[in-house]
Length: 250
Image 1 (cartoon, helix red, strand yellow):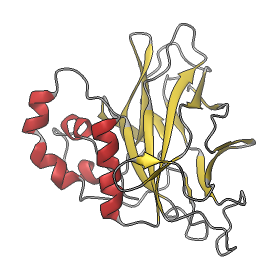
Image 2 (cartoon, one colour; image 1 turned 135 degrees about the horizontal axis):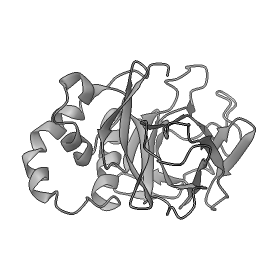
Image 3 (cartoon, helix red, strand yellow; image 1 turned 135 degrees about the vertical axis):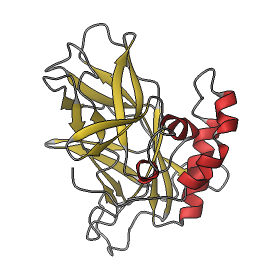
Image 4 (cartoon, one colour; image 1 turned 120 degrees about the horizontal axis):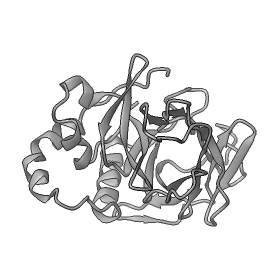
């Protein structure tokens, strides 16, 4: 599965090998100063390897997990290393939507073209995101060691409310944007800043790249103090955005 890397990610992995730059990455929530911070991580065998301390934009392709379900993805997942949530064992991680589902129009994100919505499912819990903001739900429990590894199912639905291919009411091809925030039942911990998931439903990789870059540029602020590093890392960005890897089973 192909994932996009923001400049923050590239700077965060500059010390890693070239293989790390092209690997599948998940959302990495962790605790800093009483707040959930979001970066990126990957699995090396059974070991969680932090890839970036700060990353808010993640891109993924629908249909690559299972060609028989062309409008579904289980990525990105949520992956945190041992100690990411000190004293958090047994507490819950939850998501909430900050905006309705949006659609790439070539120069920004607007309303979906044909009543599409996005279904988020974990076990018996399922919530549909359309133009309105639904309640989210807790999707994971922090491990005894303070880590986390969870995946939800993200499925794009047509106007008829189902993802059945070939039924004549399929969701429109294109790029879709989901805006989420992560929270926890840990006492006194503030929720994360927004994270943006940019899904490609049968569009070109060029358009997917453009949409991801637009979100990075217009919606996701860079952490303070990175301007000089951004200039130094420009060459790495171009190379990393052209790399990709199929998602390996966790």
